[in-house]
Image (cartoon, rainbow, N blue to C red; front, side, top):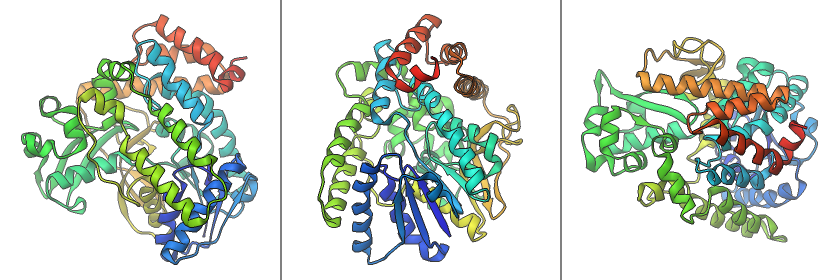
Length: 446
């Protein structure tokens, strides 16, 4: 088996490589090809991977290349985590709406739409290359905004495009721990879109354990989402939202926290990663140690703007193999070894959410095996959640259309219809600022 990793110089690639080292033997993995447009970033990540090999006493054949076709040829799975515009682009994504008093976040609100506008054309081209060079490969997408991008990919790759996000799985693990249960003992009734989902029930046999959890403030205070949203609001909802819904339910609080002087997430990562990538001549052991120090700082400040707005501290633990890389490898294992898993993934709706059409990409529990991904029915959902899902799905599709047709009018419509944008005039000012500060949008709308 060969796996190609697009965005192979990315900071989180060692997480994926570490998971591959752990599972490569049972998967029959023979080769990993790292592709990136930036040779310098590949050169900095390579010794980190060598350090992991030395530490674990395990070797995994890999190469690093700036030639896309070389990476794709013979690939059985393609992992994709790219950032068009790099972190400099993310800083602009987040800062422009904040200047207008609107949430500035990488995947949520205007920032996510701007990110998508410059990402969709690149992903369309990647999909065409994959279809030509590795037509039988499964495309596992981590590129944000993950749901929107996966929907765009499906036009070329169909059911072989699968979207991965670790947020729902992380929520389920934390809820299981609060209930003092193992996740494998429970059924998690989760529905929505990427970064816009809700945990509606937690079944243990025929019993729903969620009402018990929602009524216990001490248990709620023991995990991230319980502290973020607070018991009163969670009981009012009767569900536990994905952490990214904080930016909808507490939008003005988040803007106030960042505008009070807090560094945006993009600004923090830009400064931090610039230091990591600028050092040269490290041995594999030194490179691995530097990467781990940088990652620990990165994880300790995750969701800092939401924590500041909610006036809570971050207390989550740090783990080497715990995020989207574990989700991705579970997909590979299910398909390659025909292991039947149930996972929360981004895939075509079919009839999972009955109020959306069959082709809409949703984030729901799915059965995964050698035949691919099959979403499970979720049935009716609360009206307020349905309304938000329908609104955001329309905005996502307008954004894809704007990116493909180079339509500024469609982009303005998408921004103005987003629930976090308060007026057409604000949307226009945000788009004007993006259109002169993001090089890819200058070209797109020229």
